[in-house]
Each structure stands twice: as structure tokens, then as C-alpha cells.
Image 1: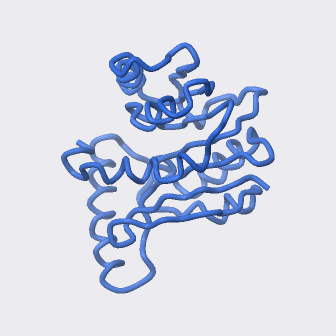
Image 2 (image 1 turned 90 degrees about the vertical axis):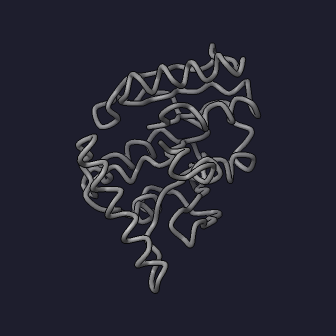
Length: 200
């Protein structure tokens, strides 16, 4: 569905700052879905140990199959089928945190729990890659984005019982939990963004 609706645009957002985030020994990928970013990460950094968490068993299977088809290493990837809000974080800390097109699925009160939890397993200097939708500040771009986001949230509430009803910006929570925005690029008339945050 992603390819039909958006072509390569979302994947371009996912990988915008990947090279700047490398090298990393350990990476936490949350809500990664079918593994499109995971495969690009392992192509560039096959030695990285990855913890891959998704609430969909089907998406985990798709991600494993993608790696197998591309002959990428799977022995360094730990797949966990878990709701991130119920997940007990390990004692391990990570060099890279990735939440692409994921934080927009949560209500503000859920983000207030989730973001500190993820920030708590980041090392000093950890990079956080975040690609997502956003609402431009004004004008026709804002109106266009509001139309797209309204339809998107309606569709996903209907098909997946998505808890969020509108887009909540995570920036202030990331800042509050020690992360500083290093770079941001915007795409599709500011509907899409790709961020590189660093733990201070």
C-alpha cells in the first residue's frame, strides 16, 4: 500500500540521514514494519546488532523474508513481537534509535510514556532517526496537509483501531529527554520530514 500511495517518498525520508548516523554497534528499530529501513541499514553496516520490535507478527515475518531474499545477515538481528507500550526495556543501551512513521500512531499521553522510555536506553551521543508526517505552519501547504492527515487518520482508525486521532509533534518531548535536533529535511510541500536527533 505504501508503494501504491507514495512510491519511494517514505523510504527516501527513512534513509535521508542514515549515512550520517553510522557507524553504530547497536540499533533499536521500533515499529519498523516490513524491514525496508532495516535492509538499508544492514547493507551499509552489516556488523550492527539490531533489536527489531514490532506489534505485528506478519510484519516481522516480512522483514525476515526481506533480509533472506537480499542475502543480508540475520544472525545479528533480534526480532521481538511486542506492543512497545508493554515492552520491558533491557539493560542494554543503544547507539541508534529509529522510529520511522511510528510516533504518529500515538496519543500525546502515550508519547509522554514512550519517548522517555526510549530515551532511557540511549547512550550519550546516541542518534535518533525519525521520519514522519508533519503539519506545516500556514497557507495552502497547511490546508493540503490537514486534508491528507484527516483522511489518513480516519482510514487507519477504521482499519487498525489506531489510538491516535490527530498528529502530535514529539519535538518538545525529545528535547526534554536530552535530545537535540541536528538536522531536518522536509519533503512533499512540508508534509513529510526526516530528522536526525542526538543525545546530549
